[in-house]
Length: 487
Image (cartoon, rainbow, N blue to C red; front, side, top):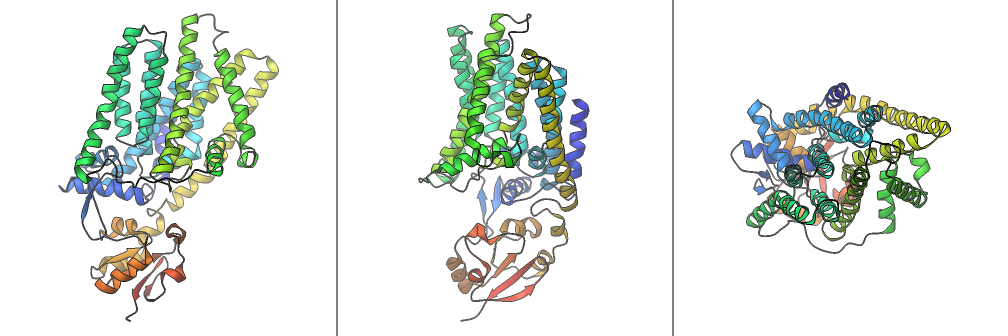
């Protein structure tokens, strides 16, 4: 597993040849870190050149990138280094977790191999985003909660609370796993009542203090708990099924999932209930009844993570952020846990079945590993050759960016404002309101910059409508600069 972790670090470094992938969210993290290092606080550059406090995202990833300055690393380089190293750590934690639950070294290595070859996990660690750091803190906390369930000691649950509090400061969805841990502490009847409530209080203090502190800072900075607008946006059955489709496609070819989501969900529920009922320990004589009960609590804890995480994602989408995509990135924390649960089920089948069952289990494991390897063989060369987002290869020699660098500073609107700021240092606005953009350019002067690689569907417009009334100033291989025609 350690060898795989080292190879994994080398793999992500290879994939990020052009730098860690950049998107709009990356800009918020990196630009805030850059401003912190420059002495301007944890703030990001807005379209008018104003510095806005970082509240839309939690601060820990930006703080981590800013700490790279101590080692001579600029924030973008620090993002690549941090997420590369974290891939190896996360791979190792996943393998260790499998080994702790199954006491099987070959399954632990298989779990590490699945992590190593997962195209979803590889790509997630190749972006300059907070998910890899979040995953590290979260997986570490899971190991500590499991240790507490196996060997109740207040120190383990307090350490877990610290990591989960830090995970919230990395991604707000970390609150879901705090709830999951609270639930498992409440139902852990094997721990004496007075002891359990004392440990629960200690956990809540250590995990929720960072939450309270950051909420207080946000209220002080912007006068509100969140900068997201509260409203109601309906959740459709199609969106729910798409969520489960994404999860199922981690382990099953998409062509076998599309249209059969409900069938697969029922099959997984039946398998999960079977695993719960048998717990996979009846065949191990060295396990006592108390050990079996502990194993059941561990499965229950892992289940609580799904039961807390997915509903909170839907609540966030329904009331705060309807544009939240129910994709691999958002659901990523559930993937390593799914691998662990799958391998625990494999362990149960292997030890409770006959030779035919074992042959079938081995064949399925090889097929799954082959599918992961095939996907990785397609993804890795593409990442190495082209890069990701606006850190891709073509952006390093972008003539549009070069033209903006040498042009007089003016008001800028673009379908990729974050890319402009990241590559030129110039403030820029997006184009959420085309009429407002035209009014401001007409009143104050300015330019519209349209990059070919960024879809205008994101702004619910098309090129003809967007550029109506504009004329081309310069056209390059990757983008076009427009000015407004005089009335």
